[in-house]
Image (cartoon, rainbow, N blue to C red):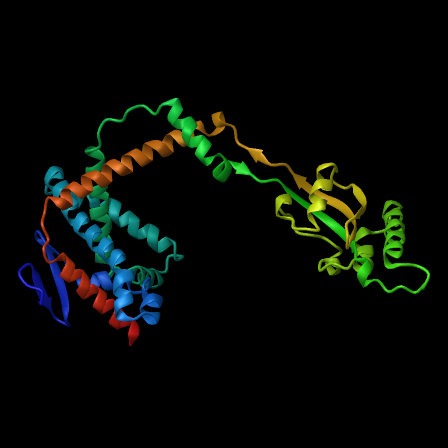
Length: 336
């Protein structure tokens, strides 16, 4: 059983004492039950405990940290800090309600789904969060300037994934497949008939006939019913035998028609309807953004270090048992 700093509350809930505050199993369960519902429903207790424990443990540690940080922050801020924060917290309540069209009842239901036990719990959370973050910010070490080499290294890391927009092409296609043609003249083979058809259709498109209507009638690919119009795509994503179209599109301007483009099993006529080139933002354009990101990461790392030091300075020998109890409650609630 949980002892010493733990209290058994009504309804079978336990509370972990942190200074003059408490963390109840109920608030942990409310916060994580929905997130862990599927895992609880499909897992044995042994597997659930193994997989879910890191998340529950982190949640409890965060709660401990928030309380300790708030207590430290309040010592420095003075006893009247609650009154000074009231206006800011009330503004946060109004902002939250406005997200639900001003419907207070809907907003309250939403905050309960997020694990809050009513508006006062919501206000207390934001009061603690604002003051704690302010306290952490005041304890940050003096920032060293971000060097150009740091910015360049980060740019090279992010260039392809973040700062590059892949090129795209869109086109209409008449796809003639010799193997699927009906051959009426026994003296002609499918390939020669397909070539003749492709040549005729190419001339007709260049003479002004509607490409889409010809595609609907003669094309044999899945997009024929849409006038042969393919959705915009990265040329590199085209698989065989359609990859040859990407090579052709590089040489074309929007609106141009190319063909016949012949492969082993297809003869294509393609009309390029759109094309954008691959583009990478140059370093000078994103340099300030990268610098802000590096500073934010430094601050976050420093805050986490301060946070860990505060938590580690206080012993909670019953924490593991409390986490196990919360796991049991979450598991039971989702198995009923």
